[in-house]
Image 1 (cartoon, protein in one colour):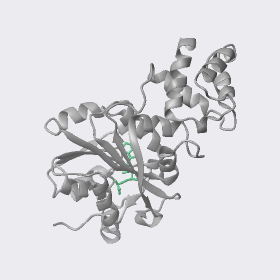
Image 2 (cartoon, protein in one colour; image 1 turned 30 degrees about the vertical axis):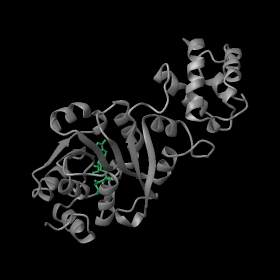
Image 3 (spheres, helix red, strand yellow; image 1 turned 180 degrees about the horizontal axis):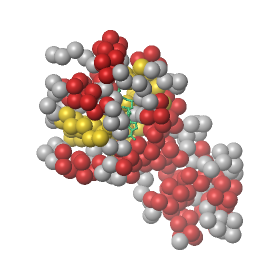
Image 4 (cartoon, protein in one colour; image 1 turned 90 degrees about the horizontal axis):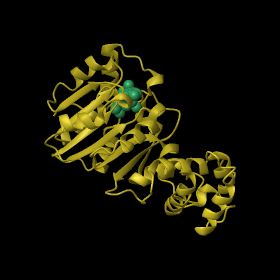
Length: 292
Ligand code: SAM
């Protein structure tokens, strides 16, 4: 077997060979610990017949481990300077395809159809660029991709918000949006020392398992998300105040909002962070008739 890319010595050798300089603006923090990568692969339950989508392969540290354990890897990389490096480091693996594209602009559904047409088990696995963690995860979920789930490294603070439960200070519209589509768990906390260069923040790995059906049924998804976002607009305000000042025509419809809250047995002085997903779903459905 070839030597792992993700060791401090091999990584340094590759970076020196190509005179590569990190771009902070692209969130380039490369992993140099093979054990962490193997644990990521285990959490993702990658099998011989799994198709893996990676975002940001860097110099190929994770891509290599995915190539060894999965059927095929398709990786999106935005930084052109990495393409010749990846062609070199991943040359022993014939089951890897690198797509030079910003993943936020990519037709991921189309790529899955084209590249994984004979594969039924698809996972997204990545050490994400931290400047765009949330937009990337939301794009993958909102596009309803035919995937089993997502296992990604990200900032610990964002992982805490994603998997937060009601009643905690981390719980907010991001927790709701992600838990609506998936079962979310933080599976590993990762020290800064396993990256070059070391990031400024602590990291964690989260596992998002796609639900067959969303966690709650709502009349209108867009309005449900609007209600949840509005409810957290100012965290110290009550649910009633956030909804009246944040929903279009909320002020004129204050009585209706109070009526909806009362009907559901939700005290209007509660704060958004205390409402469960089910309560938000009921509230959005109740308000929907008044606002449409
Ligand atoms: N996977 C490698 C590893 O674990 O060592 C590198 C991870 S590094 C945290 C993030 C990678 O994402 C970098 O290679 C960066 O160039 C790439 N990247 C940043 N923004 C991107 C985007 N919008 N689309 C695709 N790749 C992106």
